[in-house]
Length: 305
Image 1 (cartoon, one colour):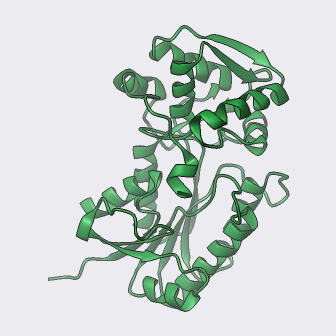
Image 2: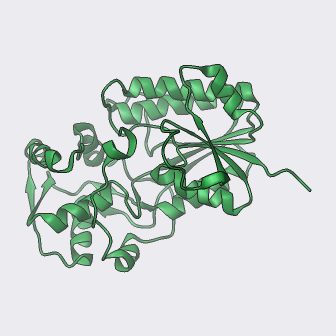
Image 3: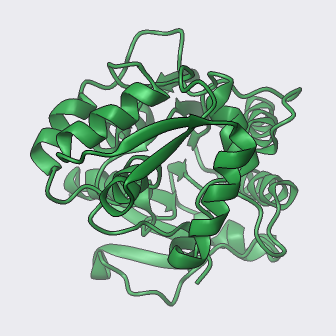
């Protein structure tokens, strides 16, 4: 009998992480997770061993990674909150990469973002580019996965647009609404990530869906599939951002940040490469019209509470 291959995933209980974890378990892999919430309920039970991130104790982090062949890294932050900043997230991830090297991990599959750039004025995209360089400079075999917007049950952007369309008669769009995005289904994302973990070659993969929408087309598609008659209006970005801030106390969350608005409006969430996912958002919405946006997905609740 052979010993199952050990895989470590950061955030097995997180949104994308749980889909990746299910794929690995279905393949008979032994799975460990590193998490910032080690005391949270474990939906995988004894099938997944849980370890804390231990960024401030690198030797313990190395021990958690020892014996693993592949590290799947989904760790990141959507926005700065409290003491957690993008600079801190970059520092933590570099600590993780170094620990993986010291632990003898063979390969890292790292979730990045489309169109990262160290010269970007947006800390999300700049931080992702810095981490890609750290991985390229490491001794690890790597696959860097660059997704756009990921959709599925309880995703943040698509789900919460649907939630807003269900609850408000007017939907304000930032500016022209002609900026584009290329959404990817979360199950397709999990397939891309896990498949990349089975290879040895160094590779960078854009993880993107088959359709490109303008933002206005996206909102209108969701409204149509949900059978919602909502007034869609164009407003200046600063006004739309102000209106979003008025809603935030109702949901106890950060609805959107100025940087996210800038990222949307500068076409950073589309790829120039062929699609790697196959699931169309319109088909998914046909099957999930009753559940999409039924509940608000809170970033703060998911990661900070």
